[in-house]
Image (cartoon, rainbow, N blue to C red):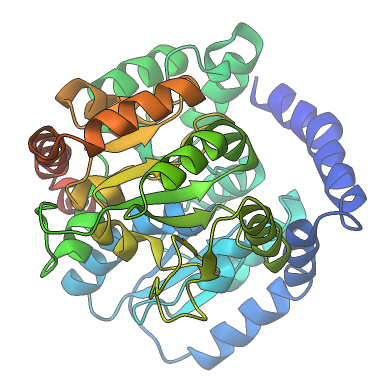
Length: 423
């Protein structure tokens, strides 16, 4: 089964993905940056090893799809460094948004994950000689995993999710993922339901360790929250829109305009998911044409002035900005999946999001706890938002319930670090 899966992946699927990526180079700046950044990966990895020839601690290789997945890895990296100060940590990224915006003093080296060709992965493993290779959440690459297995290097997937109805549970793909997961040393899931569904895919017996250890990102957002205001009663009348996709904008734009028109004291902090200059400029022009005064967050030093809307024209601000609002809307729920709902939850604000939230265990918990609201369209968004803005007591209670979701899920990072060291 392993040979059949490897053949299907390397002959049929992955070459198609590479061809598709290169065909997008002329049209997609993000794809272009990512492919350009991969050109010198092996050379940069060799140079790093030459510079660190005197290092004697174990080398842990973490892989994250983007910056959000790195936030899951960060408390684990910090925990490993605390226990083993001599350890080296290298981090690879798939996305430019992760590679370009990740800056952490505990990372010894960061690089773009090279394209998942088997000979490339074998080469990079020979250079790095990692003690462990660890994947954050979902971005696992078959040839890297199989190369690690052949080299006797343990691989660990943490914060793993198998959502109900996932394509990984479909008959044909299930066989492929069964082979892939069984090639790993350990998998640590976010919830008991994820553990159950993972075990169903893997079958038995299997030498892979499967444990439900929780989501370390809760620990990360809690660490960032220290010293910040949690109660929202004294905050300005501000809505924070985080990681907004065009699909979200199509739904919430008109209701927001009506709310801004009818409430002169209402403010909006608007953070597009892709804050490229052309995206920000187009949104600014659209708002200005509708008579809404807006400015750029970076250019105005985060001050509204006479404007009703601040457009977030960079990355790395959003987690802090949720503390300035009384309500948050997190984007992605009208597209593929919603983004990080933990950051507004730790800021003790009610969290709105779209209907496609089932891939997010955190969103499901917010709904169950009464700290989140799922909206299906623009009218419902306007109705729910108007109600929550007009009821400070209910709003504060929802914010408290959102905060408790974070508090109730702490400790995963320590459990994962302990499991890694014990493996």
